[in-house]
Amino acid sequence: MNQAGRHEQIQQHSGNDWQYAGRTQDVCGIPYRSVDLDSVEYQKNNLGGQIRAALSAQTGSKTIPQIFIGGEFIGGCTEAFDAFRAGGLQAMLKDNDVSFNEGVDTDPYTFLPQWLHPR
Image 1 (cartoon, rainbow, N blue to C red):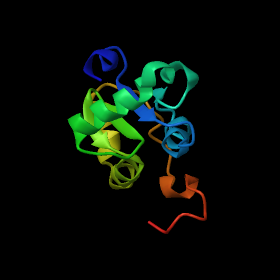
Image 2 (image 1 turned 90 degrees about the vertical axis):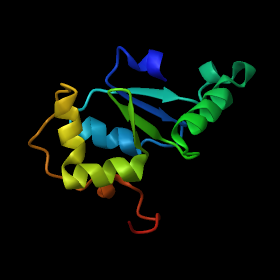
Image 3 (image 1 turned 135 degrees about the vertical axis):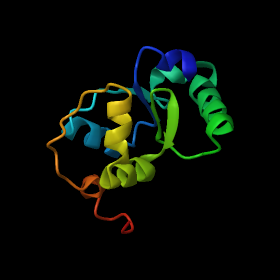
Image 4 (image 1 turned 90 degrees about the horizontal axis):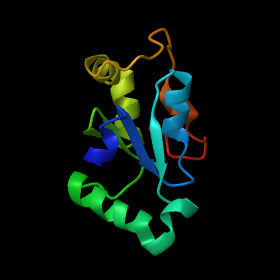
């Protein structure tokens, strides 16, 4: 995680079915790198599974996505959404010199499917 994150300020480690955090990053103009651990690229020798295990050991979280800003683990989708709502995510982006559209005024939870439990 640390070596891969040196040249990218924001990394999202996820599976192929979890695009909601990425949708928020796209709408807000936040540049990021998404590592799809379920992709064919990571299936050989169970590389995706090994990375998930390493992420879990490092972060204490077994769920995906796992989002890092400036090499610091901020949490998953819910934590990122909550931080965005509170303004903390924007502060972290500024602290790490990450450009983004500061004029976006949206509730990131609206990007989740309606069948999910209310948050």
